[in-house]
Image (cartoon, rainbow, N blue to C red; front, side, top):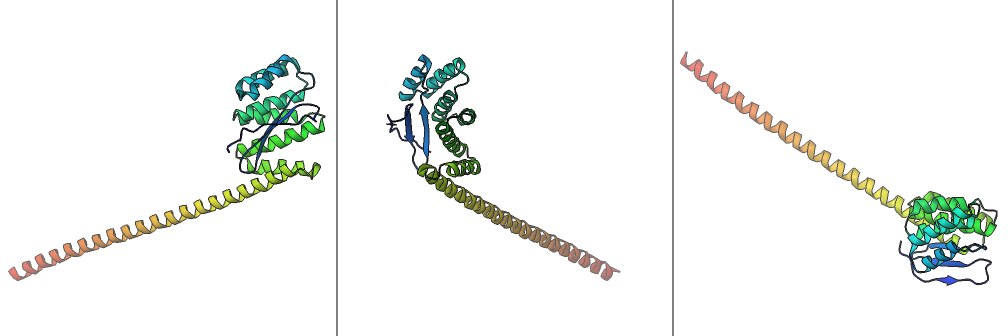
Length: 212
């Protein structure tokens, strides 16, 4: 799933929120800056803005080691990992961020976790996460859009798997028919061969009878 490079900064939030919009209906993760900004966090944000996601992740990990109880740092690690296409690490980090008492952070972490599940191909898990978001935030239009998008993808996948199963069955049936025809031809050849041998023996017996 391709991601656009457009960046949007919302100055009204208590912390910086930078959102990346993806193509085909999904929104990529957001990155949150902790209130107490350490040098590592600042370096991480700079690296992130320069699209050096691996370096950004390392800086956020350094910050998290200095402040292990700050769930926003897990969120930042998950975001950098996601953008670096390290989706298993992103999933783990977002799950840690979900333990936060900050309702807004939990929302964003769950939203990004849903996106991560989608990128990992776990469509059912993605659907469950979006539905859980909408239970608490029914006006979340992005979650609604993503939910419908993933449901559509799940249906398309199901149809594709059904088509593949049908094609396989048709191929197996065709191969089975070919084998039956081949066996039938083989049996007929053997019958012809046996009949030819029987005719030869009959002719020899007939000559022997005439000779006697």
